[in-house]
Image (cartoon, rainbow, N blue to C red; front, side, top):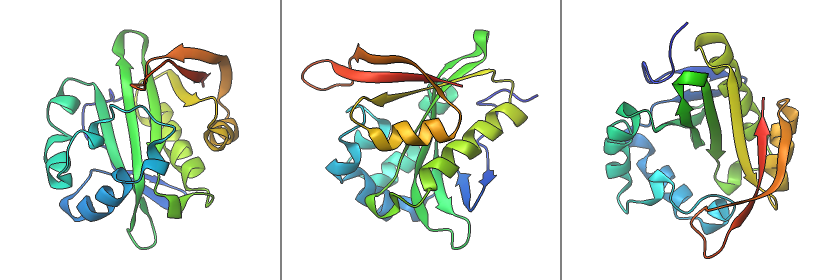
Length: 180
């Protein structure tokens, strides 16, 4: 079994591919990160929103963030045409207990098409079949019912509802905690 962060993976799922971000993704990534509706249910401090220049995001995403095993961000792409369809992220790595958290963000035009569900399924399959990960967790804002359904469809169990967390907003964020 391989350890997560040994390499930047290329993951094939049902109708999607998760791959390293490339320069050609910069414009679509910029449209994604510039859409406040996409990020209203996400922490304010996500890596890709810390830069104005998406080429800089792509240049730096596999630097210290990856080397220090803090986060692994992949492009979600349509398998048929290769079009950028969002981001998939592995974060919160705890090697000693073989645990990782997962997240994703998709542009609005990709909502309601099953892409998030298939992205999570591909991430879970990769983690359990290729790496030594044994515990996968996820967090969602209580209000984010779409992500609630995505995790349920992927056999995640809700273990804590309405936990107060710091997601970078003015006050605490109420989050649901999931495990698989």
